[in-house]
Amino acid sequence: MQAPPDAPVILGARGVMVNMGLATPLSRAFVIGTTVGLVAYGLGVPRASFNEEGEMRPLSLVSHSEDATRTHFLVVPITAAVAAYLFT
Image 1 (cartoon, helix red, strand yellow):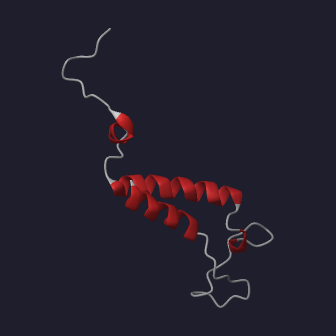
Image 2 (image 1 turned 90 degrees about the vertical axis):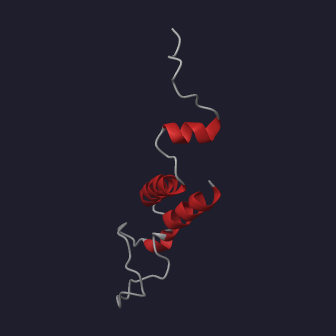
Image 3 (image 1 turned 30 degrees about the vertical axis):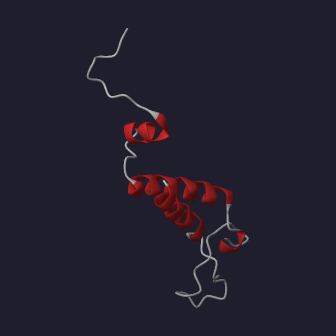
């Protein structure tokens, strides 16, 4: 069975991403940032962002809690999203 003559031709990784709906750097950055954030949250990375019970610690810049930390959880997914935006 052959594809119709007007069917799009997918070539390379960029063609696959366009076919999957990831045609713009912003959409790729969102998907990568979300995926990395979910994996990082599941693994508890970075460790300084979580307390002994596994709960997320507040950011010390906005909270006066003695359990607050300067290493916020969102550093990991935002860094991945920015890298994806700049380099894809």
